[in-house]
Image (cartoon, rainbow, N blue to C red):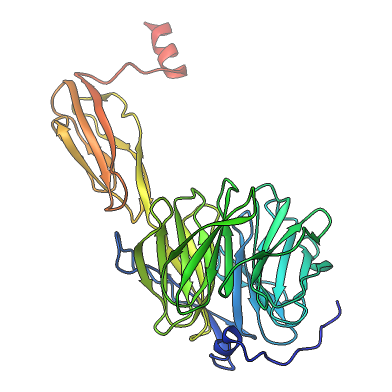
Length: 401
């Protein structure tokens, strides 16, 4: 693949802040959360060295890989196995000053933006990791996001400020840019494809909302100064926005109310952000420390399971299915457990029943985020003796009687 010549750095605002960072870089995968509605401060002691200044990050549609775009010449993508947090293979050369990227929903292509003039976007075949085309953008390209059906890509650019809409079937721009005042940086599209959220790298710190049906700006709201990138959770309920400030932080926005519901301190001069397809983690590029932090995203609890019948003086165990982040605490909130049984905070019902009968109770899982999950009127039948044996052994016993 041809390596593009590196262009002189622009004196513009966004390229000035890109100078922060050390020459020798390290990528540290960190699970963390701080403050807000619920906290989960879990850190992985994993450090992965890299060889260029990290800017953008994207997660493959299957969640197995994180791709990090690097700004320094000749511009490369670093591939990380998200199961092991280890770099795999060789860096993928995609051209000068690579700053952002996104995958098509089917995972067959990736678009990589370039902080150059022209700001042509590289089209990568993810099966071969080869550059197979370009989208012509006249000025510095920055953020990129695809509609859920994969037919269009939205690309932020500056000088003039706007968002370019691309027909992905032909890799060509549709009409002129959607003009936006400010300094558009990141872009993310809601799971239903109806809205594109564009962050601005300005001191006023606002987000523009584009109606993708009409490609017009229909709303703007303030989040905080110098917004870099934005990502939306798979359920469409929240947006995560990075701040190119010191100290750095990630603002969490309730998209129903447009209110900031949490601010997560992370390093300084934050750049790209991407959320895993399962909505469990957000990967954040920390420019000051030249690493990527991974935030464990709060998730409301779920609770399920039907306890089987038990018997007096017979050991009993049943584990309710519990999900949520942070890990929910499970408690009995109504009724009475069978004598001899206890329910652990993890949702394990165990012990040895001592009294026969029918026992009805309710179980609740809560983690301080969202609405607690409740299983109401759970019933356990405890018999005086164990149920008769079944299967081959039972048949043989009956045959010989």
